Image (cartoon, rainbow, N blue to C red; front, top):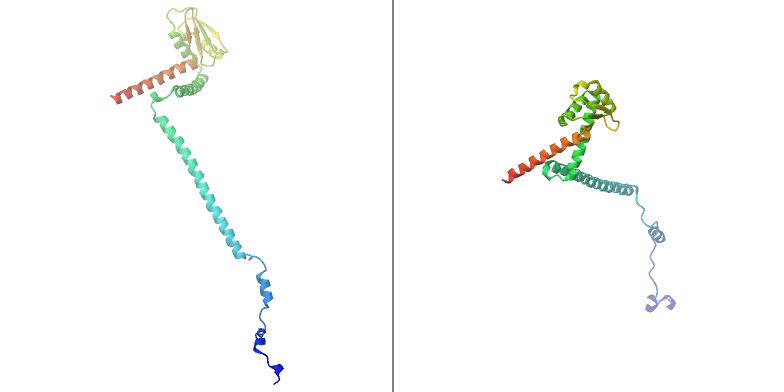
Length: 221
């Protein structure tokens, strides 16, 4: 053996160990390239799961919002009903002037419609109205003038004998059907439909207020 074939120990350390490559295995460079392809792409199953979760979350959010809206509407309706019940249970003595006035106007309008319909369907009723208005006049009133709507005036003229008073019938287009206005030498009677109804309603409301006040006094006693 020659000296050239013998390596000194200090030279052996300068060499690296060589290993036999694995046949058929993946190329390390390909593995690195595969790992560096980019972010992971979701599968079809993962996409469907994401969509299903989004739909469920949207459904629950919409359901909660719908329930909250329904609760708000229900609370508002309950509040209105409570206010209505409180107004109904409140005695007439506690009603302020505005509410009482509104009730009187409403009752007057309704009564006008009802009585106006009665006059239109039973025109002879105007004769009774004239007779009642004439009875209010002082005894011995002279120069009586009975102002009526032209349609009512024609009916009263036909039943002139039913009115126990002498007087002239005046056609007054400014009056509504059912209105009566009397003028004598020293007296005037406003027997228009609205005036008569207002007097009746005021009397009823006043009576209810007095009744409520009396009940309140009895409770305090």
